[in-house]
Image (cartoon, rainbow, N blue to C red; front, top):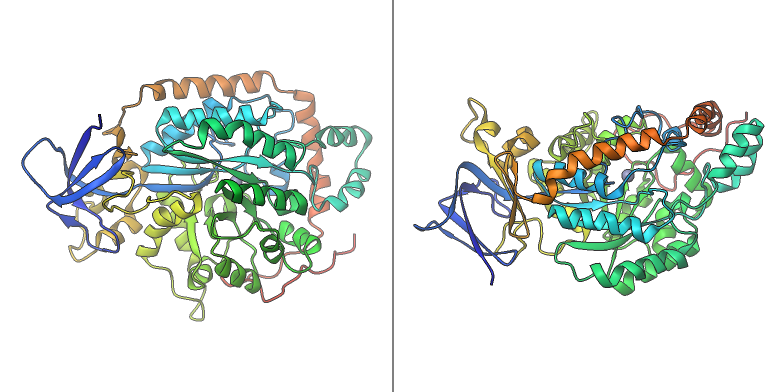
Length: 511
Ligand SMILES: [Zn+2]
């Protein structure tokens, strides 16, 4: 028996409109919007002073209910941050993911892409299964990625690892040698075996899907990329991975892929319209053309990029090239609050080029599209991202008074109001697949009650069981990592443009 829910908001934002419509109600059955019609008398859920919009998609995050900063790890350069967690005790993937899901629901996120994240148990399928159970219990829609990495466990590019280890004192060399093991499964075959284990239980789920999440090109061999891309295509599964996040990754990839990294990934079958790439800060003009032609979705994470000192992408150029853009918080949003609306605003502010020659700032409609349809494409979520009859009922009600403040020009469109003023705090109701998960500050999902307690207990246990000696040694690694990576000098500021055609990192600066 399928229940009917009727939502009667003051305004509804329909596809392609920059003004919201009034006098409508939305009829929801079996997880879908079955009718958008004039309001009638009857048993509707009245939402006075609220505007119904399609929920946001957080298109790149790692299920971190407790942020890195809360765990005690300050912001630093990406490459040293990767080693900062040496010695940390294990965290509980279910607890971390459940709290992340809860926070997303309260902030108006109705779907997310959960990128690769290792928990160190040695049981890849078990870890991913725990994350899926958390999203299942929370009621959120999610693409969850099975992680993969088979090279460069210490530094990139892998060819430099021997020289790097040679530069270390004996005790640090031993510490680093102990890190030289794959964080997920040993190879592509074992990764696919983990997927085989998970597939029967989860592949038919209405809200949840499985994909592959390679760590990134400098971390995965061509053979493994090819094998995972082929297996994903056979299953109809998504690929979602980090790509060209920092200048040093760009420099490493220039050595690994003389024809260009996106050109190589495309040849390996790992770059097409069922693929989304996170960060993509350092594309050159050839890469932009390939990304546009391949139909790949690019996920921007501006707060994370600022916090990890990796630079900013020329997002306006990507949009002008016709590339679909999505937004992710990456668990490192600008104010550590995981507010996807603010993160999208940050991406948009940084997309404005400097000076008159730069492409025009992308508009409010494109901002909303990145948060909704763009995110849905990044996650492979079908019939998600717009309020349409027959589409999934993933809806958010927004407090209009909070959006407008004491006065807002009545000629301003609601899309412009959202782009300029929407925040997580303005969310009054969150519905996913036709089920109301959150309303007026209260969670309507019993499983979410324990989320904070479970996550806090896991964080405390991780701190208690940490290897303090290893952590102290890891602190001493920083200057050596710094010396390794600082050899590549980034180009001068790009003024909001991609790198020039066929750009290659300059030869190494002599030590
Ligand atoms: Zn990430």
